[in-house]
Picture 1 (cartoon, rainbow, N blue to C red):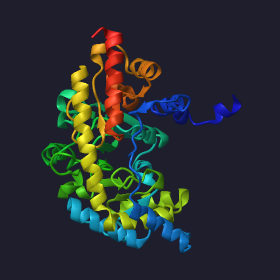
Picture 2: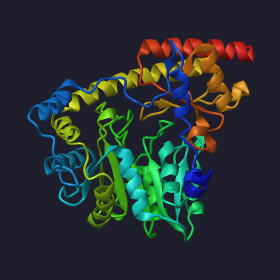
Picture 3: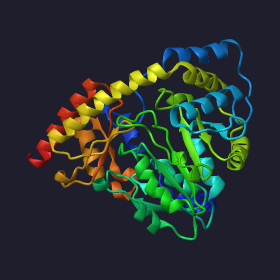
Picture 4: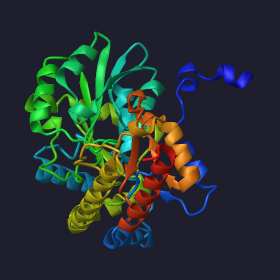
Length: 390
């Protein structure tokens, strides 16, 4: 108990991930179909793996610069310009990080601390609120609604802003809902933010997995570019989760301070992963498109399946998640997921793991095979029929 008394209160007050406890349960079970883990089921494309192997064979195992190899930053700059019409200087406006998660963490710590507020629209990636609390700041949730297709509404944002607001974290395409924001949606948000000293931390890790229209970024607005830190990476689009390689783009002064935290805490991102990432950006686009096409096929199967079962959900048009309502069951999100796992061996994640407003929903990923999706849907249908007499 003495040690507990010495731990910072805001660390103790931050709950563990609402996702991980389900993985602990699954590890003790057999024959579980997982619709839970937010990870591509594809292997990293061979040419990318080969480049990582080659770098090891050649003994390229030393530190890079703190910001990452300049060749990689140049490829990132080229990618951001060609894909999203965003121009960044590879020298001082791009920072290579240990996954997108580190980039989010150091961005929050750069702009917010004790006494500050950070707006977190929810449902959202579980790390956002945790990073804010670990910085000693206060997360201010905004409840996104299914009837708005989980898009951030300008009046909601305006109502959440106070004189303590330092930043807002937005993540589109969204984990867990699969929602997206298009250019018109962002335009209304820009009107709220353009004259305010509020930094936008824009998590765009699923940018390549946009199934209708083109991915939009709030940084594409000239009045917002210098006030936005764009977070992206290789985990989802290139199926490189275990390589732990991501990046941040933004104003050189802000990136310089983020690099300082990165410098002391991390030193540099894994060099093997950096060499692989260079290959990914140079030659990986065909594989990205192939995986995206398969995700899109699975997306339709899963959405149609949930609708047939009676679990209503809006059509997600980004990432690789579906966020159906379980209202017809009368069960809480936790009860539904725990009983489904124990009785039918299907893993889904309770919606409240992504914020209190996610209660009454569950997250399912279609980053698994069509066969697994169809069998899981059969089991879920049986579970609901048994529970609800449907």
